[in-house]
Length: 242
Ligand code: 13P
Image (tube, rainbow, N blue to C red; front, side, top):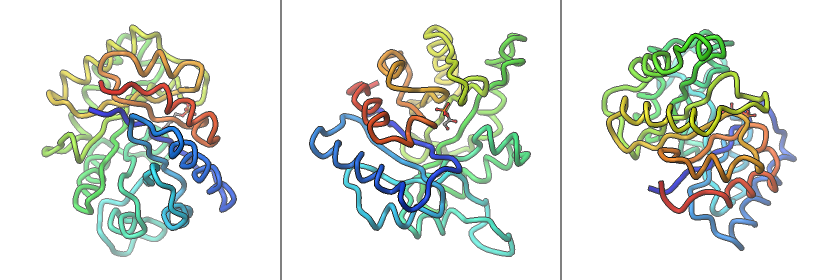
């Protein structure tokens, strides 16, 4: 299966940032990637990014509400995201779990909402440093997978992102052995060929190694996805199949 290199812009980007997506697209047009490429800008930029038309770069969202519509001030449904051109949505990112108190059950409801609207759900799991140091990383990820991945997950409607919380935005990454070990564990828990992305301080300098590890189906890139040149360098390191 093709790898996926996805960028999560988090709460970054104004209209002028669309140029980065255009630059990514231009690079990918001259040097086609052998992976799928997705950028998840803030929701305010989804329509703009889609309408500017960037061949080779799909556009996704960072969160959705479980309901299709209703009295939920400030929230966006999966149908709305689909309506403005998103093809995928990240759910259960650790920043949502941490700052918005999202539970596994809520994340599962959001993933189901994504499927209902025809979006691919990118479901995030990952342990804290304390949990890793206590030898609990695999137990925690298994519990999150059990609670956050609804029945009916397939290789087309679901992607898992393993993002150890202590590696996000810190410049620290697990060792190759730790990544391989966790991805193998997640593969067993899922019992299917669903793509498993690695996320947490992926950058041009470590992407080649990480993307060549077994069971790594791509990367979910934060900071380094804000810059077209860094992101397309990571894309170039993707492996033809995993
Ligand atoms: P960084 O790549 O900035 O560490 O962020 C990772 C992440 O949280 C992607 O969802």
